[in-house]
Amino acid sequence: MVILLIGWLVFVFTLLATSFIWLGWLITELLYAKHPRVPDEADILLNAEEEDELSENQARTRAIEKRLQRIEIEGQQLRRRKDGLFHAGSALGAVLNAEISELAAERSDCQAICHELFQLPVERLRQWSAPLGRLLGFRWAISIYIGCLAYGVTLAPSSAVALHGVILRNLGEYLPALSFPLYGAMALSSIVAVCAGGAAYLFYNRLFYNHYAAQFERH
Image 1 (cartoon, rainbow, N blue to C red):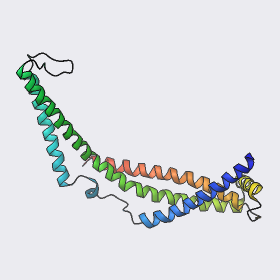
Image 2 (image 1 turned 30 degrees about the horizontal axis):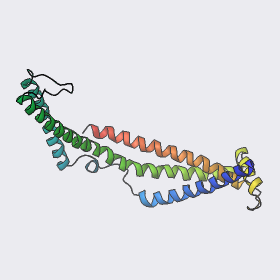
Image 3 (image 1 turned 180 degrees about the horizontal axis):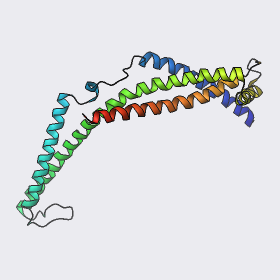
Image 4 (image 1 turned 180 degrees about the vertical axis):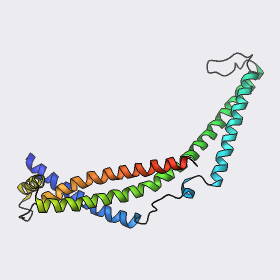
């Protein structure tokens, strides 16, 4: 029962992986074959409007920080609460606390906007590098699949023969008998190609992102 299950699992994985590799390669070629190999700075870096918004919020944040420092000086004679605010027993303390709360909320909003703007080039660069990584990953996968399939069928390595035997031993009544280990070669090719394609995608995606991120940081 276990051997039968293993045979089915190997066969199903082979079919799914083979379909995934071929369809994925075809789709990525159709979608990303003309994807730009080098990102355009204008598409990645902040535009003039975004730069202005960033500058305004940074300036407002600095102004708030200075005002908070002045409030500390103005209220240095007042008693403090455990949360760091002034004791509200005096009119000045109540006024300063209200201003601190208002400024803190505004500073938080400004910092959030700045963070979002700083992240825009990062997200845009990832959106550029991911399709190119997929394209190259599937190209590696299809190339390795074809190479491994040819190797497994022509030279019949022991791994391909063993996988071929597992599949036929359990599914021989459903599959045509072959004199060469095609099913085993397909299983071996799909395993190697999926692993290599996934590794290539991660490698290229990270490589392109790190390379251009360091380049754009100098601007």
